Length: 429
Image (cartoon, rainbow, N blue to C red; front, side, top):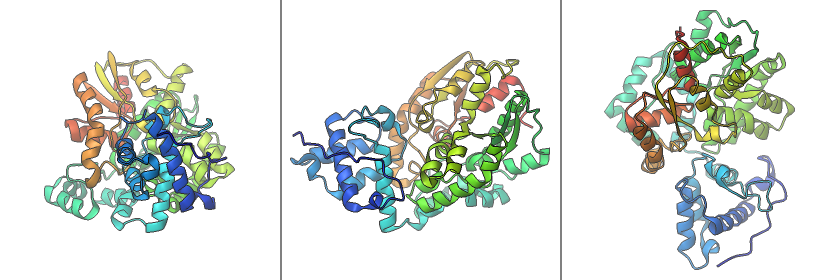
């Protein structure tokens, strides 16, 4: 039964507008978009949200009109904001129907957070900086707890994080401590200046990525400073806590803006975080300052690729890498900048197998016990492609995808910049 589509909103709603959280208008928009998705169904294979939506629609003769609001809440809880459907959808803005399913799911999530609050256990999982700072004081204790079966069972019961989810390792010498010890920036600056916004995961759990980035960029004549005071705020968007996300965004913009005004490019080694700075900061804050920081932000490998295009990236590689399986993260694909890591790895590898599939983690969704089985189903295509490739190295820009690869295949995946440094034969200090 084809239903006439409700009139689309005339403009995109900003977070602070009263209509953004208006329950009746939100439900009307949910039904409008659901009607379009129901008649299209192109996104059915992408994630659990769409199969559940269509199950609910098909279960009633009234189709979309017969779906309860609670049903739409079920669909929303299965959305992990990978944004894959946005790239897949033929009706995204500018279009007469203007469908932005990820933005609508965020709006619904924020409305639920405002209505019901955020459970304490979920709040704790978003405090990545607190966790990282505490863990870096006593890494052996935290790393033991993260791998001890009893503590993992307790973690599942208290925080809701599945016992089999691989937790990151923590280090005493964070990127900040290492950078201070080495004496700060040392590059010539002949080919530009950059500030590395290391992200929570790299600063506390993956310092080799930052060290590799500094080594490669300095080798290319770029003067690199480290600029990291706090989380980008992305974890807060997982729970609809826009107030916390906005506070982090405002403080980061205030601290990064002087660097931008001094001519630095802001480099981010994690795609979820670079997406946050590029797209969400201007929307959260709505200020010229946020827009300037966003326009100066680049994903790390996007910037290295630009150096290569400008013939500023040395080609004095001393090692070949054999076959590399490269996983392209969803939030990097959402930035529509191409597969820059794959292109760079082709300079040093005999073969690069592109794995263009979702890891099913995306923030904290896939690590939650109640969604863990569903997330593994999403990740099955990615894991199967890596397994079939039988590569000598596995690379991904996404730290959460790396943990999923370790969980599913029992092997480490590293950031592509680590492999590039390895190909140069440069030690990671």
